[in-house]
Image (cartoon, rainbow, N blue to C red):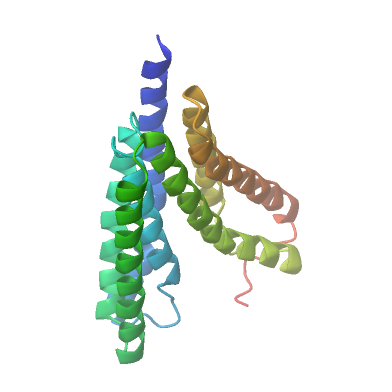
Length: 222
């Protein structure tokens, strides 16, 4: 079996795991629909993920970085899923929150359009285009890691893993490892760095889970 075939298989596994992560917030949105209110839930993570998916989808196109179709498929799917989440958020949000969502989306559309224009008009080879989009994608991936870092900080502070679901942490670890392998099989530093960090983040979450599982009070609601 040649490297390209192995890379394709690894990429398909990565697509399956990533899809599982994309659909993991569904219970939250079922709750929002049932309550007909977003309550204290915030749209920020989904808005950031939407732009992140858009950048990675663009990165995987042949005109930017050839031989990355599986990066396009999963991030294109993620883009669609995040848009649905934001639409649900919009429908069940009060006026002020709706206005903030519209402003955030308009900023993202303008930013993405400017990035696409600059990339295609000022960078004339795939090496240059890969670099600019790769760096931007890494920056937004690192912003997305702010959420698990906040949860990990809370786990250490409270010595409780009640609000850090084990299977989500395990999925993050597996996702990071699989996409790191994918990036190494046909060396891609822009895919390697964020997914390597994702694997480390997932591993730390599992270690914290093992460390604080026994000190967790599962009956307490605080």
